[in-house]
Amino acid sequence: MDRVPNGRHKVSANRPVVVLSDTDSDSDSEGFVEELTPVHSKSNGKASSASLKTGGKASSFSKGEASNGKAYSSVKGGKGSSSHAVPTRSDAELKLELDIPPNSRMLMNCEAAELLQEIHEHMAILSEDPKIKIPESFDKAFQYAKDGNHFTTASSVKQALEPLKKCGVSDGEICMIANVGPETVEEVYALVPSLKANRSATEGSVTEVLAALANIKAAK
Amino acid sequence: MFFHIVLERNMQLHPRHFGPHLRDKLVSKLIKDVEGTCSGRHGFVVAITGVEDIGKGLIREGTGYVTFPVKYQCVVFRPFKGEILEAVVTMVNKMGFFAEAGPVQIFVSNHLIPDDMEFQSGDVPNYTTSDGSVKIQKESEVRLKIIGTRVDATEIFCIGTIKDDFLGVINDPGAAV
Image (tube, rainbow over all chains, first blue to last red):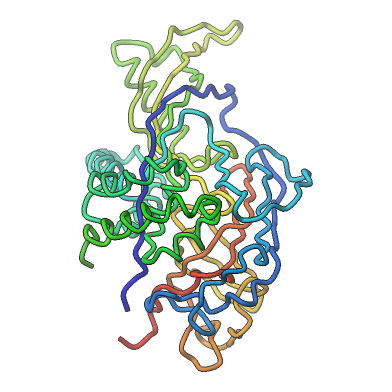
C-alpha cells in the first residue's frame, strides 16, 4: 500500500536571538494540556486515500466541521499555561498556534533531513573519538526526518508550495501541509482546519500545490 | 516540527582550558552540554549547526571560572498541539498505544482510537477492526494529531488522537502485500 504522501513546507528565514538563562537547562515544566476533544464519531473512517487505513468506512469528508468540535485550546505550550480556560472556537477560527520563539525558521522535514545529513557526515568523523558521544535524540530526529521525506529535494518542495504563500497561508500551515503530504484537497482542509475560514480564496492554490507535490514525490 | 533557531548561552570554562584552543574547548563544551537536551520552550535540541559569536569572557569572582556568552545556531524539534505527525508504534496495551515521532513520545489513549477498533491481547498485542482489515501493532506507522503536550526536564511527552478524519494507520508491517 502506498503511504499517504507527506508534504513539506517552507518557512520564512528570520533569525533573532533568544537568550537563555545561564542555568544549564531550562526547567520549564508544564502541566498536561490534555484536550479530550468530543468524539468524532462520524469521522472514524478517515482513509480517503486507499493507503491510509483506519477502522471503519472510508471517510466521506465530514462537512459539518463545526460539529466536530475540535476544541483546540489556545493554551500555549511551553509557558506553563495549563490553567488557562479558553473558550472553544470553531475550526475556521483557529490558526495553527505555534508557540515558537520569534524569529525561528521553520524547517520542512526534507529541509531538516538535508541539514541533518550534513551534520551526520561530520559526526561520523567525530564519532571516531571515543570521548565524543552522539546524542540519541539526534539519531532519532535524523531518522524521523529521513523517513518523513517523501520528496526529491527541499528546493523543489519550496517551489511547489510558493502559491500558498501568495494566498496568505501562514508559514505554520504551509509547514503542516508539506510535512503531512496530503493527496486531496479535502484532506488538506481536514488536517489543517484553520484554512477552512478562507477556503474560497485558497482552494485553487491548494489544488495547484497538490498537483505540483505529486510530481516531485520521490519513488519509494 | 523542526526549527532552525539562534540561541545564546553562557558557558563557563575553567582556566585550565585557556590557551590557543580556547574556542575549540568552548564549542566542544557547548555541544556536550546542549545537544540532546530538551527544554520546554524550544523542544529537543537535535544538533548545533554553527557558532555565530563568542563574546568576551567575564571572570567570576571567587571561583576563577570565566563566563563566555556564546551565540549558536541549532536545529530543534518540538511538537505542537494540533500538529499532524507520522509516528511509529512502540507499544500497544489495553489503555492505548505508545508511538515515537523522532525523539518525542506520544500516547494515544483507547478513547481516542476509533470505536470499531478493539484491543486484542496475545503475543503481539494490537488494535484491530472487526473485519480484521486494519491493525495497529508494534512497528505500525500511524498518522496522528497531537492534542496535548507535557514537558519535563529531559523529554517532551504528548497525547495524540487518531480519531479524526484522515488519521490512522499508514503502514502495517503485518499486512499482507
